[in-house]
Length: 404
Image 1: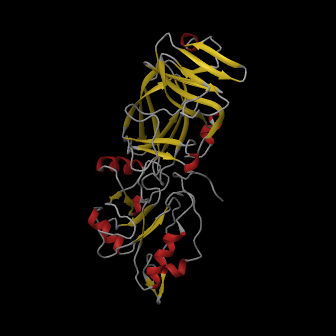
Image 2 (image 1 turned 180 degrees about the horizontal axis):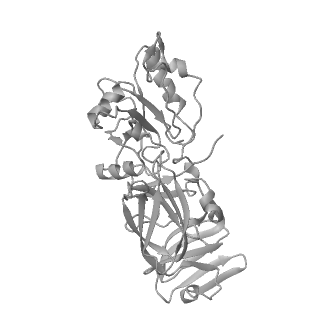
Image 3 (image 1 turned 120 degrees about the horizontal axis):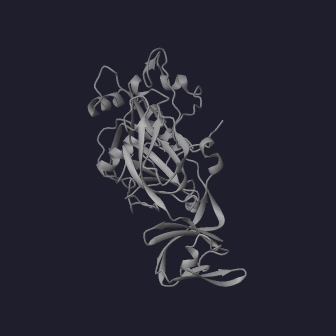
């Protein structure tokens, strides 16, 4: 097993190679520390660093089979006690922290600098909120100052301003950690290469780039540019189903995801609905499989209303309840006449008027005989006319993978 370490005042990280997992007490059997405490031990994440700029956005890493990233704090005279195939080994902490020690425990980077990251919109020169991932050469997630370094995806436990991309809950150690930042944010970064990923919803071209950090680095400026101009055509976006976020957090996450409206909801459990009067729309979602398209159950539920003659519009919401769901992953696009002011009342009127569509990324603008979705033409709904004519259109946004 290999161990990598990161230094931060009295707290440090290292990488170590192990054979087995944990003992009955949940402790690593291969590495123990006297006169100190191992704070965390997680498998090293392997990213495609050599081809980082060419790989796709929001890509999950793989797990190293034998390397563990450990974080610890200890007295200077402490010792690590290792168990390997060749037997037991004791290594002084002073030897581990020596650059020439040749120890199986390897430090990540002792020297770090405080750096300000600023993300700028190319067309206007304004700094803007975005969703950000950054990691170092060992695959260690580099959190912004004041943010969590190890993110918690559990339901209703810890609602920080972060998003964790997890494909399978049973394999949640294989996660891609991101955070939402305002116009500029400070980091403590290791010297060397850092790997940056920036996105802002479906209409902004995502950025993946490698930045070299030196002792003189103080500011990093990264430009983003809009590739699809739907807002200028009168379309606004919404996530109609979000739980537990504070209004301030929802404002930041929504802005960083390119979502214009977020509905923070009171909870509904089972068949008990305590806040429903008339129905203005049927919600589409994907639940835990956010990159596999709209869940068929949502679509069939909408058809139940349409088949009964209720021309209710479709709206999209994530049902976000934890950090493993990003605001607006499934979202509603609503068209508001550019001559009308964009406010919540006009947004609601446009939803009730049926000028909506739901997407988890693909964008398709269409009309039938000059009429929008859910209008009628010759007694046949527009939905019936376009059914079977839908095509897959990828976006420049936050899809997890490319599909044909």
